[in-house]
Image 1 (cartoon, rainbow, N blue to C red):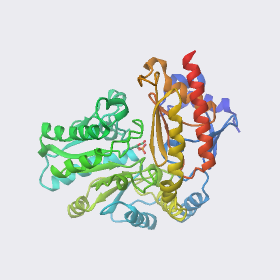
Image 2: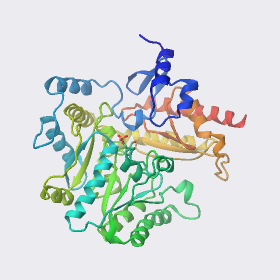
Image 3: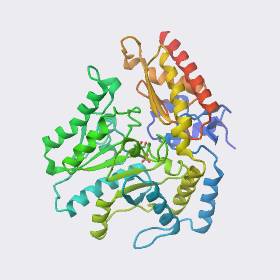
Image 4: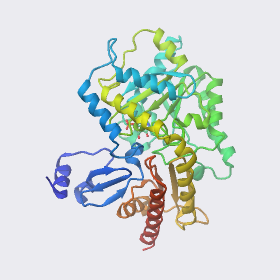
Length: 451
Ligand code: PLP
């Protein structure tokens, strides 16, 4: 068995990491994570770490769930792979499609399987344009998204996403993908009430539609709560207004629930919380608790009907609806139902986490706390009275993230916004541990920034 240093050396010599500054890896070496159990990880130095991010917002049932492992094992023995192309199906895909139809919002009765969230969003682009072409409106090509959105790393995903550094690498966005401002009240809502701000930001959709011409617009896409953009929880006025505008101009509404889906907000999907009736809905991550890659695009009846009537849709992935992934997703959903995970997040552990998280608002470094269900964020500020932020060069968020790991807690930093999204099975006692560690992290961060 290799030791930590050997893993780090192999890694630094041969492995190009996603979303990582490789120079830091060369200098410091990567943190080597070796094992997980429940909400905890263990690294190669034997440190126990509370995973406040559930991996990348996905390990919803926690690490080491035997039901999921057993489902994968059984399916690997029964049929480890077969494709769904050319009029073929297999029981795990058919069963999971029906199970999803039973928990999806509104009138969504069909799903298209992919291997990831990014592939869902690529699928969405082709599906909505294909839909409009079949409706005799091929000019409807434009998809409107939002600044700072994250929709994945494929060409379409990164284009729909509104991350400037991603656009800068690779000449994105692709044509006919445009972005309006995000509903980020803390940073951009000065001088307005949340209600007014929500209407103003949603109103930008109508302005953009009129600017480009409604006959050119295919769809609007948004995460119910922007995740990677900093857990941006929109004011209550925002989503109803977006929905109204989409209906008014007959524009398809696509919700990207890759993070929000599968219980994160205390509902199967955040669309329920916001009263949304999406035409398409993307899911991945929590569908298998991250144990194995799988994504799915849920398709509302209008689009599904047109797709089905239109003959072959020339689109699909080798791993669309991979049988082992579908079996794990099925087991994941069944465990969530048996253990009443949604109700637990909604009525019990979600409110408890939010109440405890809100107590951090009194810390001198914290300008705002916010959250819903089991996702939450706080804003680091240099001056609590004026809410002024630290300069970018101070690197407050990064310092906080590093101190948090030293304390044995994974928090994520988006600029100076600190984020948590723990496994949905976290206990009250573990929430207390998370909050204690977060508070100590803030203390350490403040003293580092002051020195
Ligand atoms: N959409 C959202 C909202 C996401 O948060 C992510 C990943 O973080 C994706 C899409 C991309 O999913 P994947 O990394 O599985 O391709």
